[in-house]
Image (cartoon, rainbow, N blue to C red; front, side):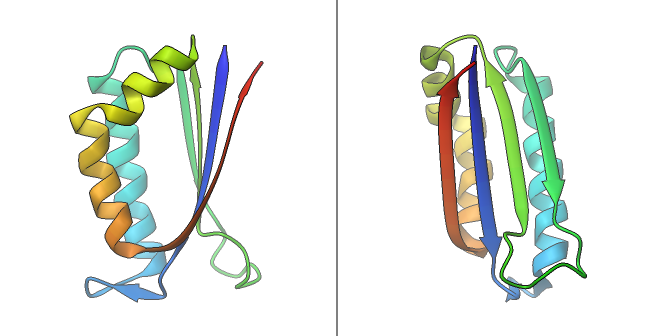
Length: 101
């Protein structure tokens, strides 16, 4: 089993929306992937509390896959790339860790 953890810092404002509004859009788009990609074993998406320290990341994604091959399929899948394109327009930074459980 492989765990994929990604954290995003969103711009305070992008595409006419606040960071939290864009995080909600991203969260919904990410969760929809679980209905489209049957090789995602588990997905959790959390949005940082709006009252939390502003140096924290805005959104955290945690996914589990059976293998690194499945993680790579996810990374290159057109549906994932659509979500990634949106996030790319509204994020300031990204951090990621992938590891075997």
